[in-house]
Amino acid sequence: MKELQSLEVLPASGRLHNFRVELHGGDADFVNVLSDGSPETVRTFDGTESALERRFKHEITEGDDYYFILRNGAKAFYR
Image (cartoon, rainbow, N blue to C red):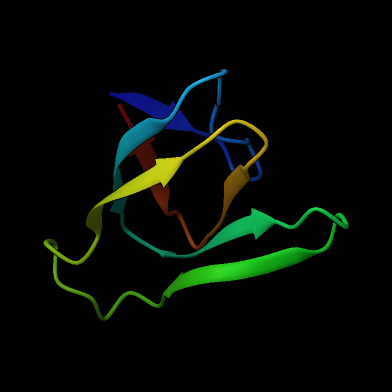
């Protein structure tokens, strides 16, 4: 699994990707950048979730920009 830095955009190519994402520790927002450039929070993690809730799959297509805002020592990984 690759570690993502805060604000690092998940990579997208010319095809559909299903990413498996894991979040460890701290708290974070999972954000989508809309076509007008404004951010939209897709999911917020406040540290009260179970380990299972912090592992999820997300579908990304070309043109979609998703990233994490990581706080309080949170680490995000994907594959």
